[in-house]
Every structure is written in structure tokens, then in C-alpha cells.
Image 1 (cartoon, rainbow, N blue to C red):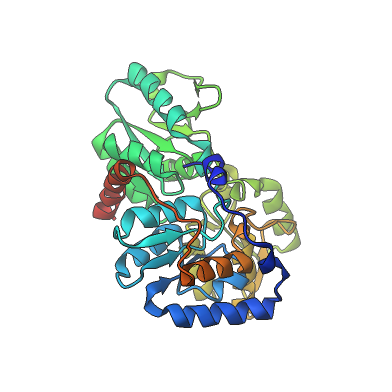
Image 2: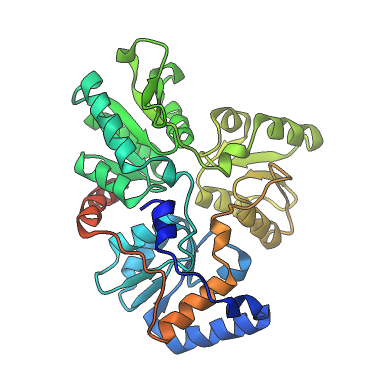
Length: 367
């Protein structure tokens, strides 16, 4: 389901929640968490607001949280504080009697919405005409359930930013070429690390429905979907140069969803978890510029006052869709559960879930 479909099914939050004080909402959330007990589980993504993260039962990246939710068999309700595709993945992996709720259904992901199933099937048909049965689809977990299902039924797997190298290497053991959805930057950076030359990578433009490539198409090893994270793509080589000029001894660490030139100019790159662990292990007094979502960077600043931490882009804003999950929406979700009138359920159609789970399980078997 894309953001437009989610909007069509969205219930508007009652006005009374916007009139409550922060203290009133926090006290009510604590009360409801106590009353609901083990029936409730709240996973919170690293990029969520602090006002929400303080109530999370587990904090992590999207796939880790989905797996933890699936392992928590006692929880009847999973109130997923993240974005739409994350809640979908949790619904795919959890038991049929567990209900997944996204506090605000408008919390989508622009990257996931850059690859819809109709665009993907058209692209797949054209690629099959050109390359025959030599292409394996892989998709970042930051994709819709329908895209995961497409990959699952065509023999591919999902990837995370933590295991992308391993899964892409496996992909090349299966087929000669890879179609990587929907984030071109993670695909490009990962393939480059594995020794694929940039000249062997093509770009598929879903809006123009065409392959962008100058050379001999027989040389193509990776077909990158023209999608990106609106947060990470905004870190630039200019940001890197400015930070290095101002702080000559600073360490620059970025997420692999950043552009290739930004990753190359940085000292290291890795998943959200890698960034967090690197900062945790860093020596006191060291300086770090981090190229990832601002809520997480701000949290790391607070957690590590013994280190000098800044955002790679000082004028950067948090992920706007992640920020749709706020304290009023969290409270609304919990009160709705408690009253037996739950809102904003996320339910993936059965066949889509079955095929998407194939892609997820292939990744799990490899990782």
C-alpha cells in the first residue's frame, strides 16, 4: 500500500488530544501501558521523536523491531512507532491473532513509494525482453509489502543496510544481474564495495519507464531503481568539505543511503546500528559529524556529552514522515485499544503477505 491509499483509509485524530498538555498525555500513556500490560508492545524506530521513544518497549531499526514484535507472542497489540512499510513488515511476520497499529497512517516513506507494483512489473517485463532469465530482484526492506511480494515470487530476497553486502553477494551467485529496489544509493554503494564497476551499473527510471545507460547493455551487472531517501540524499559533498574545513580532525560517518560521492568522501559508512555502535565505542574527546536523520543525531549528542557530535548538515531537518508519529497520536492509539475501538490497523492482504514473507525468509536464512 502506498501513501495515497493509506490517506484514503485514515481516521482523523480527535481534536481533544491536541488540547491536552504534554504532562497530561504522558501520565495517561503511562497509565494505559500499565493497564494493558503484556497485551501491548510498542516498538520505536531510531528516528522517532524523543517524546515517543521514551515509551518504546524496544528501540531499533525497522526489521529488528518487526522480528522482536513477532517473537513477542503475548502481545495482542503492536503499536508500531515508525512508518507504514515498517508496520506492514511487522504484520507479515507476526501471528494472525496479533494486531498491528500505526498511530498515524499518514506516516509513509517517500522512498518506499518511489517503487509501486505497476511500475515494477512493467520494468520487469522490459528487462526480461532484454536480458532473459539473468536478472534477480532484490529489495531494501524500506519498500512496500507489494514490492517485497514481487521479489519473493521471483526468487529474490529483501536486504537491510546491515546485511546488504551479504545478500547482494548471494544474489550474484544466483543470477548474472541484479535489479535493486528501491534505493539507488544503497544499491550503488553496496555493489561498488563488492567490486562492481560504476560503469557496470545502469539506472531504471520508473517515471519515464526506461533504462538509463550509455554503454553496451551486455556489460550491465546491476540495475538500480531510481529511488532515494529524501533525508539521506540531502547530504552533499559540499557539507563534507565545509565540515572538514571547520573541524580538520573530525570523523565523518554516514549512512549508505547517502550519495556515492558523499560516502567516498567520508571516513566510514554503515547502517544506523553501525553508526550508533561506532559512536558508543569512540574514545572520549573525539569529534564526529554524522550523516543521518536528525532525531537520532540529536539523541546521540545527548547520550554522549563526552564527545563532540554534530550533524553533517547543520541546517538539516528530521524525517517529516517519521515525525508524524507524535505523543497525541500514540495516546490516541492506546486509548482506542483500551476502549475496544482500535484505529489505524495495518493489514497486509494474505497472498501479498505470503509472497513477501518468502523474500524476508530468504534473507533470514542467509543472514
